[in-house]
Structure formats: C-alpha cells, structure tokens
Image (cartoon, rainbow, N blue to C red):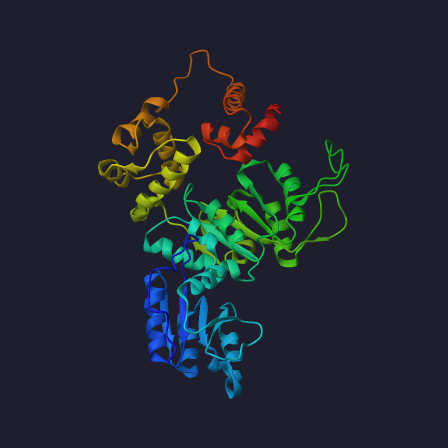
Amino acid sequence: MCRVHSQIPAVCSSSGGTVGRILIVDGDASVRGSLRLLLEAGGFEVHVAASPREALERVVKATPDVVLLDAAVSQGPRADFLRELHRRAPMAPVVLLTGAGGVEAQGHRHLPKPIDPQELQRALDALIVPHVGELVGASPTMREIERLVVRLARSPASTVLITGESGTGKNLLASVLHRASRRADEPFMNITCSALPESLLDSELFGHERGAFTDARERKIGLLERAKGGTVFLDEIGEMSPALQGKMLRFIEEKTFRRVGGHEDIRADVRVVAATHRNLEDACRMGTFREDLFYRLAVLTVHVPPLRERTEDIEPLVRSFMNRFAEDFGKRVLDIEPEALARLAAQPWPGNVRQLRNLVERAVLLADDAVLRVRDFRERDRKRPSGSWPLPDEGIDLEELEKDLVRQALVRSRGNRSEAGRLLGLNRDQVRYRIQKFGLE
C-alpha cells in the first residue's frame, strides 16, 4: 500500500509563504487522507477525488492551483481524462504520484510514492509562487488576495487592475505579481501617473524621437519599449489625461505604439498592471476616464481593503517591519509589548500600511532596549510638526519654499530620492519631477 511517510509536519508553509488550493486525485483512500492531513497542516485548502469523473467535477468547483494525480489514472484508456483535466483547468500544473516501477508521463513533474514531505514541499514551492509570502497578513482577506495573486501571476492576462486607498500596498502587490510570473526575468518598469505633467508622462511612457519638441536633443526609449517581455506598473492611472488614456488603450489592444514625434509602430509584449485609489466607475460617469479603457483594464481586478478593515493584519505587519528595520539599523529589537500592539490595533490608520510602516521605522530607530514600548511610538508626535503652518503677514513665495524643502530633503538623504520622498511625504517619481522642475540635479 502506498502511503505518505509517517511524519506529517506543517512543512508546506515554507519560508516562501506558499498558499493555495490543492486537488488530490487518487483511488487509495489512505493516500488521499494522509496527503490531506499533510497539506492542511501546511495551510493549504485541500480537495480530494477518488475517480476521474469526480476529479473533473471538483476541478470545475474548486479551481485548484495544483493537481496531485495518481499516475495510474493518466495511463492507458484514461489518457483522455488528462487532456480533459488540462482543458478545464489550463492554469493548474499536474504533479504525478508514481508508484514503484510506475511510468512517468512526459511534460509533468512527478513524485515517487511513498511521498516525502520535503520533496512535496519543494515541488509546491516551485509551482505556487514563493514571492506571495511577501504579502504579510493574517486576515481572511489577505489569504484570498494571496490566492488570487497566485492565479493572476501564472495567467496569460495582459492587464491587471489594482484598487484601494493610498498606502494599502498596491505597488508591492504589482511587484509581487511580476516577480511571481513567467515574466520575472524581464524588466519591471513603474511610474506614477500623477507625478508628471502630461507631456513628460507621454515621453516617459512612449519615448520620443530627436526633434519631437524643443528639448528633444536625442531619441529617448520609453518605459513600454524598455519593458519588452516584462511588466509596466502604472500607479494612479486615474490621474492620466484623456489623450494619454487613448494612447494607452491602443497599446493594450494592439500591443503597438509610436514614440512621440515618430511614424513607425513599435511592438512590445508587455503586461500592464494599473493601480488607482479613485473609483474609476464614477470617473467614467463624470467623463474624466475613458469607459473603454476602464473595461479593458478591469478584466482582472484585485481590491486591497484599507488597514482599518483588516485589523488582524496589524500585528504581523508590525513584527515584519520591526524585524526588517532592526536589521537595517543594526538594532537589537526583538519584540513589542502587548500594550503597544493593542494601541496600534485601535488606531484608524488613515495612511494605511504606509503610515504603519513609517511609524514602526521611527520606533525601531528610537528604541533604547530590545522591546518596543508605547513611549517609542509617542516620539513621533514630538519629532514631526503637526497641524497647520502659520502664514506670515507678508506672505511667502510658495514655489521657492517647495524648492527649498526638496533641496533640504535631498541634502539630508544624501541624494537618496526614496528617502527624500519619505521625508516630504512624496513618492520617488514625484521627487524626480521636482528635481527636474527646480533644476536640482
């Protein structure tokens, strides 16, 4: 009788944080039961089938991420079953479970019986996208988002739309989608549409030819062209002008574009991941966003809820940030006191995960022992001004003030644009735009 090795540890929740839905197809009840216990202990959702007919019914209902299939089922007259399985679940890879002297089908991974839990773990880690573990959280919502990312990453979809309030982690989700996909070895290019004026955004995305406009002294290759085979992430696409929306729609539908000032079509196989904090359906009704572009982008949508709606995620996020910054700063911070965690969990977090991350970063930096305490988080209020700024009676030159603040942030961060953006409450693209605007290169 073929069985799984006797020990059943929770091995499948590996360091990569793999999650997913598994379908086990095996006529041996003991194998089905042992594998089910093993996988459920590792955090997987498990479905079982004892026959090909039952398996095809389960595939339709369960949409598995991986099928563990007794190799005997795919042999001889049952080969048609394997073809039908692929037809109904084209994105679900099959791992064949082979008995002693069993025949290995070409084109499939296989595991010999009895199943070694460590070998099973390695196989599933390779198939169910290890990068998903970077999406930290314990809530049912995050578990479902992780599952959806697994499926989207492996899908051939050319567009994905990510929605959610500012600071919820849409940029991280886009990055994970890319690195977990078959495009992972190709470029990941990202830009924030709200950070640049229309003419500059047009040139950044599509590139331009020499002489296309006054300052176009040489040809520029845009992000879409540089990202061939990879992914382009368009953050805050709701802020894109109608003219650029039309050009982007043409690119998505035809996979071709023209550089600014160019006359030749350029083809690029690129997945477009777009994100927005705006309600694009409302924007369509108001006439500020193209309805045809919205429906083209929204074929596959991931919504990331605000942090206040998934408070179960606060503690794992805090501990993840705490460990990361402790390592970055060379600090021996090992834990956080329960009272501090309770106070953090009770906050509304209007700035979502980004606000929580910045607060933990400052707390770790200011901590004077191995445990983060309530007082470490209070320091933030004394270090950063709050409320309104008094306007002098004589007034101010707002542009000069902005220029000076950007300059100070760049000096303090030693030219690190990401750090300068953190100090100013801006993202990297917005800092880059102001550097060009004020001539601070």
